Image (cartoon, rainbow, N blue to C red):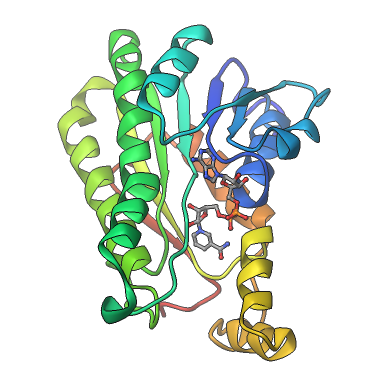
Length: 244
Ligand code: NAD
């Protein structure tokens, strides 16, 4: 595995914790040079000094900041758009602002990084884009996840659109659709529900494998997709059997 991505340069968004962090470490372990970015510099500090990883502050909501950062680094061969936010609530509990924010962070942020990176990939005739969606999307309706499901479905639409436009020009674009995965933000959602043990049991109960996924299991799929040369436009479920 240490040479699977040798010679490749990877940019990961939201690499400060959770799936993004595990993926930055997995890309580096697979031989890539990794720009691990996040809005949270404190979280990134833990990656300082890791071989093959350059941490960098990047707010994916800031168009000018995204453009400037990407101009300041080496050409990116693999882009992993991992940043995203969960909004809890049904359509009646979701404000316009909630929906706008979810679109901005879950979808438009991907458009920002892709607009900045894709032209260089096209010049070189080679590039892999991986977008973080979710099983809560067009794959599956999940209660209490309206803004989240809507925007994660849009991520699959964006993924297929890019795949279709550039399939003959060396660009591959795929989406990852996890089920419920252990991460700091999931911990926060479980604590926010009041009874932590009950909330945790409920999240586990919806996973037919009887456990939550790990960030490392999702990272393995991201690494695979970075180097998988005969797949594009696909939404890869990795969900412990939730969508069987
Ligand atoms: P997380 O939610 O615990 O961490 C998210 C990271 O995003 C944090 O480090 C945060 O600082 C960063 N971030 C927030 N706003 C940012 C911004 N504007 N610019 C840059 N970085 C920003 O991580 P997670 O739970 O592993 O989720 C990562 C992705 O995976 C998200 O897109 C999420 O929707 C998706 N996902 C997670 C699960 C799950 O169960 N954990 C399931 C399906 C999909």
